Image (tube, rainbow, N blue to C red; front, side, top):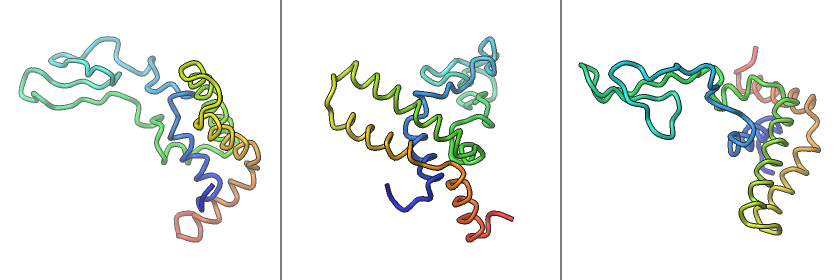
Length: 141
């Protein structure tokens, strides 16, 4: 499964399917109504476009950046949590895949291989390996 440290691979694979296990943006963090002079952007909860006033066309993103599923935020999690999230995401992706396409697809087989790899990851070892890599490149004190 590549040359990435195990924690990096957990993050990368989770970011490829985060929507199967993470609800973002969190509904409770969003405004209850559309901001004045704005319209909601379809498909992007919490993102608005200004439609009148001096800021016409300006995009207003009110989603919580601190919980956004991106590499930086995922790297703050320990490998045990990443492993748990990834396994949940794989299970839900597989469920939806089988519902849509039936059993036995190549994607289902690939998910099985990824799940097998993820289950074998020792989270403590993955965290230690990640720290070692970060120290080697001067990003960890």
